[in-house]
Image (cartoon, rainbow, N blue to C red):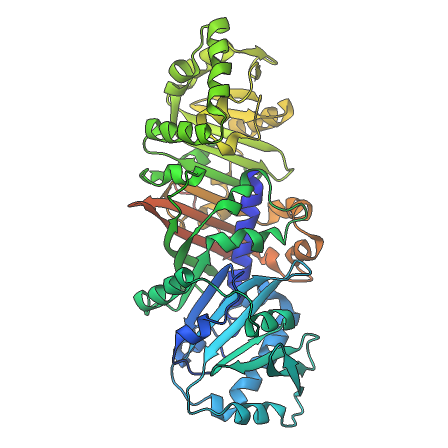
Length: 534
């Protein structure tokens, strides 16, 4: 359920990190962003924009994340393209160049297609550029080809098996290592809508001092990400299929990490689960203090006003035609046990809850409580004891009724209360292992690597995703298609050089402030003092 969302975030950061340097040194001028954006196919999930001037190139020279993400083979191919373009003097005469990269899924396999676009100055002649590219060279071979209704150039380099396809359309230079994607760009098919184009133009103008701007199309993300999963999007992750709106994110440069932050707007015309957090206030994330050291990933939620959240959740359940059925079920429970879920259980909920997955793929849910002892006494009246500390609920969907979609995977769980935490699992052994780790203080926050990572992410949020790459490799193999899962092996791509990824959403005046952070693992190997407030 929720783990698919986590791995979507991993995929997103992997793609972004590689794209930051994908064509960073292609030296072309830009005069009209409208022309470039009007060529981007409609299935674009994201568009990256940056100013490709000398200062940008110097800052990102030797950026270690680049090759770690895309691998040596791809890196060699991109280096060949860079060297080719910069050798063409007629394309290297400007000081400041705006570049766009759009992200698309491959129609045949689990690969990312990147389309590079740049509007050329009118002073440049198309045939002169073609003649220069077709001239003989010891470093590459080229030939003229037909691309849809346009002509183009296929360029092959000695160090890579992938040719680069290049064309000029309406005074705009476009290129890709994917010929089908470039054909879609040059063809008559649907292009990105006016709203997304306007978001990109506005965001570029408002954030002109940012090194890199990233624009996410929420509606296009589902189809993009679904291509990478062996069984597609399902459960909690299927909510992405209904998403709309956009995110505008800006890069904060750090030499050994990827850091983006910005604003996300969401569709408010239809009630959806994430919208329940839109008018909450960000809350300090303290629930992570209970997570075991073996945590591979988690999704933590926080609400400043549970009653407001619960009212919105009831409306959402009603739109799904589930509320009356659930309330009838709990009316029967009240009649048989005297326990009212709304009055006797919900009053002990704190303001945080989370779902997490361990390195062995066991799943847990953790709910922060205001009074763990009182909650334990109430729940024991509607459950059966399994051990001295572990019980199993007699009724299903209590926590789905209380917290919504993240709890779908725990319909009638085993549970324990420890301190002011209620912990749920679908297996007794999972809770026994959790209790051992908790009492032994084998906790995630006690590890120097996580403490180092955690100091760079926001300490307040409403939705916070985290994935630890090394501990999640087994799950990658089970959820991703094999050719993408293989990219997390050091001998192929080196994505295992990353320690972790965080993606946070914090309510901010009716929209969300978002943060993305991913760091290289070798930055966590030095001794780090664990902060006392964790």
